Length: 128
Image 1 (cartoon, rainbow, N blue to C red):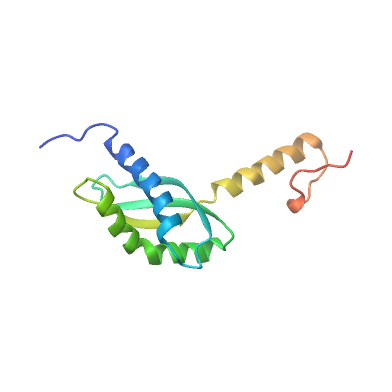
Image 2 (spheres, rainbow, N blue to C red; image 1 turned 135 degrees about the horizontal axis):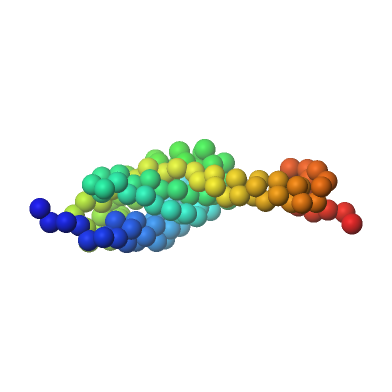
């Protein structure tokens, strides 16, 4: 059996990420999907499934997830036409909460360093 080239799945995941970013902007007309940014793509070793992590602006994340998963079949077909691989993975869209968690950690650090409590919606502004 032939061994896979190291890094091949990473290259394919990166290509899927770039292509999906373009295809979602051009092809997805679902009003539930706002401005989507694809953060990462993870592919299973057999290339059967891909988890697509995204953030969204202008739409509720849960609603955007539903809209993207509804368009996943169409996006899969478009990817199949673009990619030159035998198996194009099935797409599973997952809202990436790491950005929101990062902002929360930044807020907590600023609160700890400043010593004064910072309101959640204050975006780190302090009166001085």
